[in-house]
Image (cartoon, rainbow, N blue to C red; front, side, top):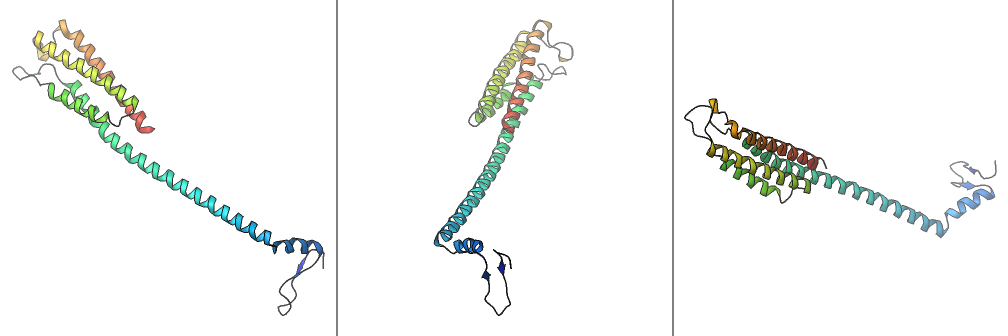
Length: 192
């Protein structure tokens, strides 16, 4: 038999026989009190590392789930604001048919303001800045519609008087741009 080998004799003999001085040094050290403590410390460290990794993964999963739920709630609030702003932008200054009353713009504008005020509590800085820009553009648009209605008469099929058409088109353009800025800010906020 070679030096350092472990031999197994028969089932009736001693269970293991350590042969050779090198084998005696290695396997003899495993029975020492130091090896016993070292193996317990390694086992304890491995258990702590496994628990820490598991806790971190679970924490990240909970945070991801919470962020996903929060983004759903934000999206549910951002969509009505965009819808309300688009309804405001689509309002006709004059009715298409003669004799119909003009649509009152105040309820649409007030609805837009109410929704914007509720979003201000949880919107990011970028979203709140976009909302401020949207409200400024909506205010200018509503005021322009009021001025057009008070200073002119409807043209053919509800066309706007040429004297105020440029001002109306500019207010309409600004409102459309502000809606797009808000939409993009909302997308960025939801993708963070």
